[in-house]
Amino acid sequence: MTNPALARRLLDVIEHDVLPLTRAGVAAGNKVFGAAILRKADLSLIIAATNREMENPLWHGEISCLNAFYAETPGPTEDLIFLSTHEPCTMCMSAITWAGFDNYAYLFSHEDSRDGFSIPHDLRIMEELYGLPPGGYRRRNAFFTARSIAEISGSDPALADRRATITAEYAALSKAYQRGKAANAIPLN
Image (tube, rainbow, N blue to C red; front, side, top):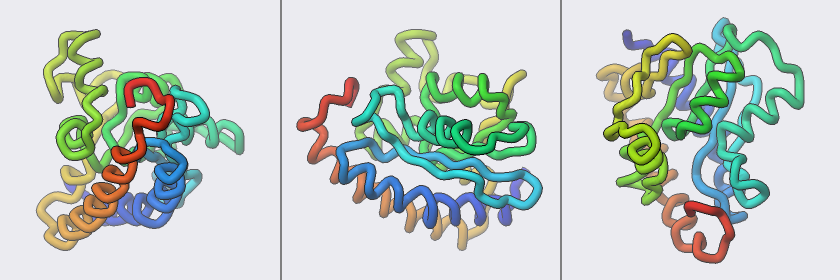
């Protein structure tokens, strides 16, 4: 089911809350992944965060967001939306699940991470550990429902244009990350 109002809000949060943090994170040598948590009831932002792998290789954008959420005033996760800029890796999917979220939304797919951002590790790990082909995990399962923002947007041309604008910003950040990644000590950079 499409929900253009929800898609618009998710794009707002990525553009105005996550992206500025990610710019600073990439400047410090981190990857381009970020996340946020919103309330389902009114779509208000609770917390936004970005990748902090230069501090700890486990602090992906989603893990950083969950850490920040639990450091503040966590509430019942069934009342919340988990938003990720990129489709979460298996570690982050597990963390989102263990934290009790029944959902997550993402802008870029695993294939986008591999093909557009030159970060193929998510798909390689799923294939090597679980024998899953690209896109092979169940996005609707007993724990959560995962949806892309494109799916939530439907065919709304204004939202497609907005996604394209944000994609261009992330592509530029990805190029900056790729230029500097050899100088950092992140495993699987």
